[in-house]
Image (cartoon, rainbow, N blue to C red):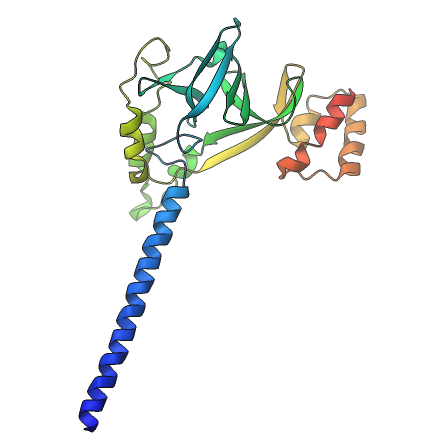
Length: 248
């Protein structure tokens, strides 16, 4: 009887351990799936948004177009869909873009999202892929385990010839690219902030701003920074700088 009872207890314990192991395994799969679904940019999907979104582009010549759009992170280029095929707009022709609730201004071939401010003076956010992070040696003997990932990313950069001409078709299908998205490696994104004021643009750092101010304005600027307790790593705090430039 004791032997039978012991056997029963052992089986019960083993079943509990097995159930616990299966539960942990299922939770791990769920968390991984949630991470992948929440992850927007990968080496197979080097875009700012999780999918192409309704957008409007206004050109310097006064023309206006609506399409499904996204921002390619390798060189901060505007891509749009034309019958399911990804195409690129020459950024030099762009004046203003609206994608969803976000507004962008093009400057020097790059797309700056308006974080705060208006078209005269605003804090611009520039998001680009962190290619250097993909090339960090993590493999055996100091080799890079992300070399292939970098090649993937570069291979679908439509800003390269022959796709620099927006009138030409690319060979990249939106559906094909999206379906392969989760097969790519995580693509880290760098966000830098810039002050754009009256057509001028400079990095929103203390050094970057001071280098663009006259000597008599630097002291005034430092007083403003001290008074408003500007935190250089916080975009919300950097937005306060627009008040200084609005007073000029």
